[in-house]
Length: 187
Length: 187
DNA sequence: ATGTGCATGTAACTGGTTACATGATTCG
DNA sequence: CGAATCATGTAACCAGTTACATGCACAT
Image (tube, rainbow over all chains, first blue to last red; front, side, top):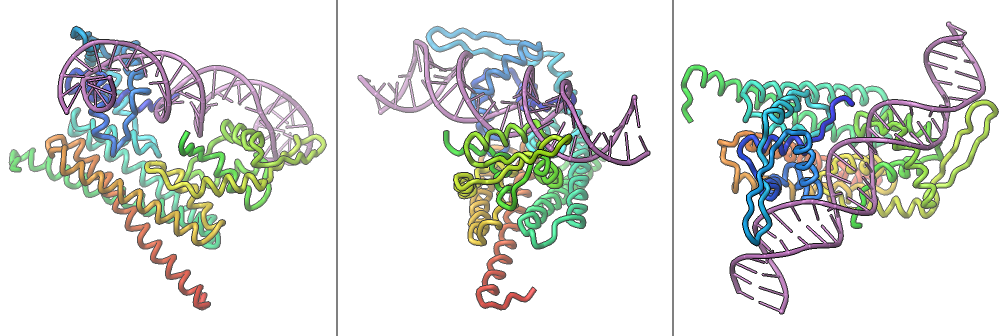
């Protein structure tokens, strides 16, 4: 009853903020992003669209062509935008990397500040995770159970890399926004 | 019909290779590992045990205590060991980090060679993933769609970190096994 | 008496997958 | 003629989650 991640639904909703699209369009777009979040292959796409429609987060216009099946073009509604905003504002729940990436892709369509906030919240989550790992190292895992030890080491390495990326990116973004603030948006 | 990851089932099976355990024992063990793979909190644990029992991968002995509910102690069977081996031998399917970590934890209970193979297969998977990301950078994503660009960059950073860890760990392990081969197991 | 720990489980739901089903159009 | 592309969807299944249900023992 708490967070209800429901990534795909909201991600689709986010994609629709750019322009109205048909299910087919969305699928192709998702296929392009498959390296990041994996294509959900129609079996989950169409039900998701149906769900969004039922909740009133999108409207549907049928573009009938003769012969060819009619394109059903979906557009986001005001309630849809609100729901999406609500989803975006949710703090990044730990472990859901995919959800983070989805939001990251969508984030700067909203606001620069939102993007920054999103990165910060991720940073906090990862930092917490890493400190948990450190405690686990100190506590249990003797190096004799090297499986556990390896897994721990691996997870720590990843977490450190994430933190490093987040820090450098935040630095870069804040610098960019400082420059933009001064009106020196050369690029 | 292909891979059927079914992580938890097989992970439990792997834990049982060390010693017979009751559901309760397993749960506590999993709780200890929660920072890595997240505790599955009985709702999935007991059904998993039931499933393993139905498939003949474990046997169950009931230790009746008066008063206190009886401990049901599960032991792995020969078919269970075979099934587990089959699962371990599956190449690490991309994206399933958790499955990889589970196998990593279990791997060296089997054989040193298996562990190495496991790491190599992960390495191949991650390398493939990264090259996919690189292609995606070259192809689509103009820096204007900075959301996509950021996500891409992030994923690449992680992938690189993974590769670096895998390489250094493989190096370390092969050195260790070389030393052991020479009988100079100083540590 | 009350709550914490041991020890088991069920039921309903969720988010997703695979594989299948439909049907017209256009290209080789 | 057959295959690929456009375009929609359904049905069955799967792994896992949350929340609930049970019940005894022992300590406060």
